[in-house]
Each structure stands twice: as structure tokens, then as C-alpha cells.
Image 1: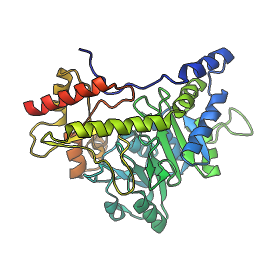
Image 2 (image 1 turned 60 degrees about the vertical axis):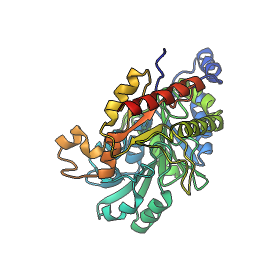
Image 3 (image 1 turned 180 degrees about the vertical axis):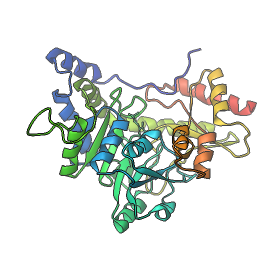
Image 4 (image 1 turned 90 degrees about the vertical axis):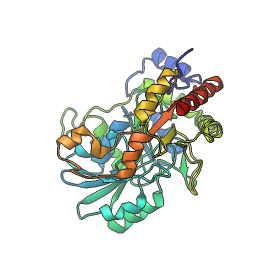
Length: 373
Ligand SMILES: *Cc1c(COP(=O)(O)O)cnc(C)c1O
């Protein structure tokens, strides 16, 4: 039987047509017309004035942090449980990530613990929406206002999600997206920074392109990188965005189906369907093993693979990253909820191309594995 991949994107809209247009017109570089069209459409979708497309979601975070002026010795508050892109965007600038433990209910940063982490060196709070439910944004915005802090929102997993009816990607000073193939909207590789601040937007455009000076080309006052995004990527992105509502609906239906089929299995905590501010979008369908279960997520991943089912373990915590431990960062810090999620959480196939037959196989596989352990 075929292996059920953990993710497969759906590319059967206008992707091919728009890509052919790139080839036919010769516009394949970052100067092509689809790039601006995609930036425009994406920023309108998330209720922002400006969109700056970049090479990937990690680059988007780097550009955003640099544009905000984060630098040496500055502290940035962020979740312990996230992808390393978030911490890297901070440490690359010589700034310090200050970590916050997770809420076991939503798997997001526990906003109640943020205020205690604020010091005179704190410059920004990074909101990272994890796996399908948004962070409790209002709490963060209130703290940012009270202490005069910048807010950066990593909405990489939140295409089409809202917080109290307002799109994710519209909160704080600047927000970022990824278009990696496992996100709701993909361009193969790709990312975007969105903001309402014209000056920030202009800085992001500069940072994306080696910080060329505007008056004289090949003269540079600052160092950044080449984070450009191509017309080919934008062609795929435009076609994907046309189907955002349909994709979100599909993901939600998948989430409901899995929950319905898996809820009677003992030993697993399933994602919550909604909070009072959002309905789960199930970027991925995550499962957390109960504390009584001896096995960890790596064991489950192995057993599921034997059943022909792809899965992934959850993120590994920032304070437990060998690279940061070597640098003496997060010395003896502990975030028990984040550590628990990192060891006991995994996600099952939830890509947009997943068929009903594949989902049935996943359910049978998970049931089989859970009875075996
Ligand atoms: C995927 C992801 C990123 C990184 O995006 P890339 O395009 O893979 O670089 C950053 N943050 C979060 C929360 C993500 O899920």
C-alpha cells in the first residue's frame, strides 16, 4: 500500500497557467509583474497596507526584525515552543530571545506569563500562532502599549485564520508569512512581510535586496542579504490565493473528521475545536500523548511509519537547542509545558491533497498504534 505522506499540496488551480505566462513572457526574476500583484492580493487578504514578498518565512522574520531596528543586547519575548526561525531572526542580530512557556490548551505562548518577562532591555514581543489556533492577541497588544514595545506577528501557519474576526497577519507593527508547501498557501519556497507602516515597508524592501542605496546603485550603507522572491513563485502564489477560502474549509473539515474518528481512543489529547476568539484552522492536526503513556512522539512516529503513515514530531524547544546551549543561552531555564509538547506531540497527515481514503487509513493506523503501545 502507498505511504500516506504527512503533507502534499494541492496545485490544480491556475498555477500551471500563470507559470506558463512567466515562461511565455520571459519574466521569471523578482522584477516580474506577478510579484507586485501577489503582494497586493496577499496584503489586502490580511487587511494590511503593504506586502513585501521574500524568499521564505525565515527570511521574512529576519527582514522584519531588522526593519524594526532590533539589535545588539535587545531582548525579544517569544514562545519557547516554536520553530528555530523565530529565535534565529533574533540571535542573528545579536539580540536575546526571552522565552515564555506554552499554554497546554492551545499550545501557544501563555500570555499571562509575558509581563513578568519584561525588563528595561525588552524591545519587542513576538507572537507566534502555533498549529491552528491564534495566540490571545489582545493581551499581548495591551502589554506592548503599556510598556512601549514593538509587536511582530509570525502568522506563517495562519493563512485564512482570524482572531476575533480580524485576519491573522494584521496585528502589531509587522507580520510575517511563509509559503512553504505545508502551509495553506504555498509558492514552493517563499514568504512575506506585511505592515501598515510605510517607512517599515520601505525598509523591508531595501533589506530584501542587499540594501542598495536609492540614489546610487552598488553603493550600500547597510548589510542585509538577498531575500528576493521570483515571478515564478508569485505565479503559483496568486493561483493559490484564489482558493484560500476553499482551502480553509477543507482543512477545517479534515480537522473535524479526525476528531470525530479519534476522540474515543484513550491516551491522546486532540486539538481543541475552538476558543472564544477563533475556530481551529488545523494548519496541522496535532495530537499530544497523555502523561500516563510511556512512549514518546519519536516512538509513535516510527510505529506509524511501519503502518505506512507519515507523521512529524512537534517542534523542539528553543532552550533545548544544542546550538543555543553551546552558546550558554537559556542556561538552566525550564519550560515544562513546552518540554512536554516537544516530547509527546506529533502530527498526522493533514495536507490539502489528502483523500478521504487516505484519511481513513490514517485513522486506522493511529488506532492500531495506540492499542499496541
Ligand atoms: C514554517 C514556519 C516558519 C518558517 O518558514 P520557512 O518558509 O520554512 O522559512 C516560521 N515560523 C513558523 C511559525 C512556521 O510554521
